[in-house]
Image 1: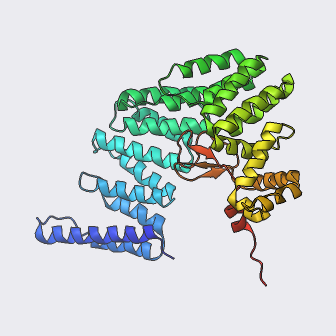
Image 2 (image 1 turned 180 degrees about the horizontal axis):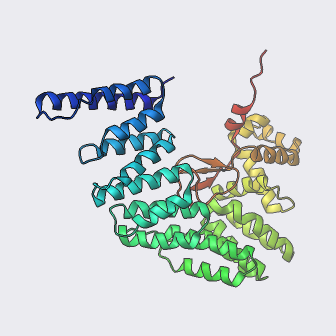
Image 3 (image 1 turned 60 degrees about the horizontal axis):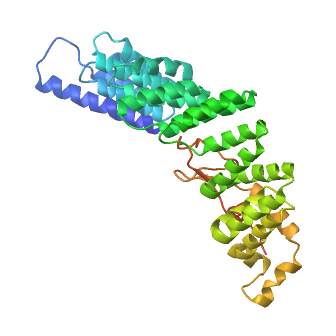
Length: 398
């Protein structure tokens, strides 16, 4: 079955044939033989679905000059978008090999070829070309963005910082948020390697930026915990919970663990009870976090869970709990532990985070969205996604 690119290539041949005929009929005559037979030969390759031969014939037939070069670029970009990267590479390499093109056209060809390599996963080859174009070329900005993306994939965080700093100078835009995440990545690597001092240095650099991520506080709290400065770590986690609700799922389990180690659950209960009285929404988020992390034996957190169950309309309908005081007592006859365990299993079987920018969802928090490539756009769900669960259930026939 002929592909879309086959039809478009055939159209190009037909247009070129018509153009050649018009120029030959109305323009000046010369001694060169007509090209009509070449166009027909190319179309024959296409009709027989011999696209590779058609492309090769096209490249030989049409010399790259100022009147045809855009056609070559259009054809190469078409093949790349269609996933036929090898054909795109051949076309762009053919343009580069021509001695009679301008410097700007050669840079455009190098940039297109770099995009071909990037699309094909040949990141080392793409990097070489993007680096060349990132210095004093018309494609400097685009190449720096592409290099940053490659370095993010490869985890080359220092190179990411370098590219972002160059982009800030070229575009006069702030890249502080991205740089703060790159520094956090370096800090977390240092923590993993047991170098807490180095990790704190990276966090210190991030905190000097005008715009930064609250992720720095999570890493710093982790460092304080490793240094056994538990009081400092507790203070940081409490601040995160009160001021960055979307990070509760990361901070609360760590806070509970610290209080358990210090045997100071009374202090935790006092802190949570103050939150419950002042912020009902935050109390609900805490209840859901407790459920999905299977946290038990903390009275204030149990109260948050009970409140969450009683006030979730979908869950109330499922359990048969109504607003009636009489029926509300039904919840006391149902094992809360069983409800919590069931909810925990349901939550773990569905996505827990979703990107606010593109909608990509995942089970764990991803600081860099793999879909839209934006930093810190994922947010946790605040309740069990019953709709998602029901969609996956098989239909039951009567």
